[in-house]
Length: 408
Image (tube, rainbow, N blue to C red; front, side):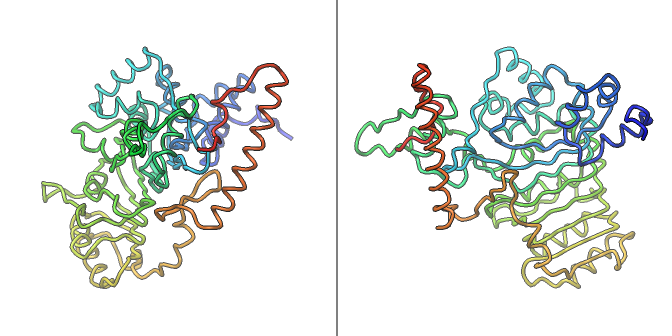
């Protein structure tokens, strides 16, 4: 059997650049021998950007890019997954990231260069790793695909009580829970607001970056963009869709479960003559109304494929004819407008690498979830108590910051 080293370098690069290979796999291979170290330095990177994951992998990547910016040129695709802090699941509580003074200076310099100064304080603050998305796009000029996932804007989701939010904040800071009410009327919300002043951001940082006049490097070569809506209705920034569709090399846009509100509808560009270059458009269970769909039909002119599974009772035939009328290369057999919504139910569920689904209700927990959470917390408390006993036996004493399960 031929050895790995006997394979042509081009074949090894092709294998290690396949979508199933993660950046961790590439780093591991690079440490095995000189040959693979050389090969992996030429491989494309398909990166999973884990927002607020306890591993802090996104912060570590940003730190790496500050010292080795050429790594960003190898990024081929980015898939964003959302792992916000859950009030009743302490294992999801990501710590606050700390930058050195020199790193903060570098961050500010890069953000000013690309005119994304609004994000500087949020990156340096170290809480919301989603703010790193536009920063990462400053380093990735060869990026081809961006899947923004199913967005969870709140840094703590579902909505916490004031004491839960304070508890998570102080744990993330590495301090013990010490807040006490100042008087009988103090419910904790003023202090909560001090801890989480940026928690109410209503637009993702990626879309905010589209407001800039200059195009970020990571958007200059982008060919595929997808977005699977929001965990809660009412946050879809329809005002930015036309800006996404006008990216110079974009070919494919896929939107699922995006529901514009009456206050934030789809907004066409000021120049009515502008046309989107995209060739494939997929709208699955999106809440666009008749007027918005008519605008999209006129705004596109190069479509070769159109898939539409609507919500509501819009006239599918009429909408289909509009897209055929304004897209000369679109033919009826490459246009699907009558798909059953049930066919997309399984693919529309929120996903998490930890196997725990985000809940869309205000409370975020069903009765069965509460029972499971209580059992999990009880088990974790027992583990913490055992660790405390071991610490006392070893003479190290109890370290409060390692116990996030204190009863409030």
